Length: 347
Image (cartoon, rainbow, N blue to C red; front, side, top):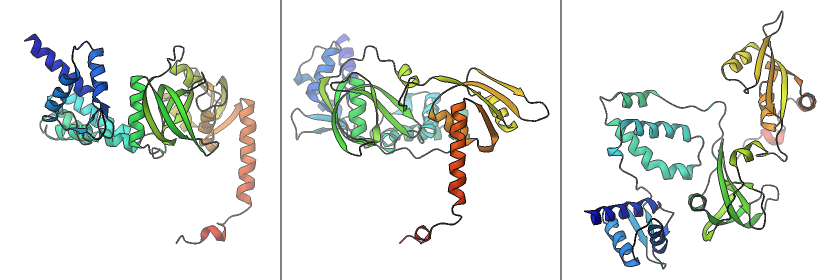
């Protein structure tokens, strides 16, 4: 019986390490992973196990290279029939939330699981959770941009390098120089931010973590070389100290008058943990005091309120708002119609 249990555990371990196409894993790598987890096996045993599994699961083998490479077919997925309804519901709702966050190539990889979850819930006609799934939707706040497109092969290589702590060879399109750069990088973390995902990593020869927009990686190859350990790297500290900013972000006190509708919004969903709203005498407006990051994103939020806010502090923000208003006034007073070269229909 113990031998049978060991065999089952070994087969399940193999299945967990085989990626879905276009990702792949070599037979020699699978052998190493089994040995790392305490299984005493040789190459012949691994090959026999893989052949056995391929007769039961949607596995394919690339025999054009040595050692052979294994992967699940693109439409392969775990069977959800043995999970409880609440787990299927979580997947169903996650699909609606992630659609506006993840690139299409990643959503395509998750599509089989989402489809099985929907099918599972659709079959539960008498189950309350299934009915709930038909009546619940997710909708992002504000205008959501379409996710930047990421090549599926790039995503496979990046995710594997990050999880396996391996070096990554990439061709990266620099936004500032608009040129492709060949880089050897050591992954440290991953951030999904609105419609863009970022790989956090250090470049070979440097110690400072940098951010790489995933959609600007034109080519990626996960190498067998172990990545450099980032012992002192803290992803939360990195995000709070200058993500997408040239210098570390400090906090400032925002003092402004806000309209009743904005005051109501901020009373329910505060701008920060340190915030207070004071009713203004002889007015339905409120005085806002809040500790906020001194960053471009917060300033953009202020700009988006338009005439619903009057800023007093910080003074640097007031000056920037005045500059923007002067530019807008000049920009819109110079012309009231579309230039003829732009108003012609496209052919």
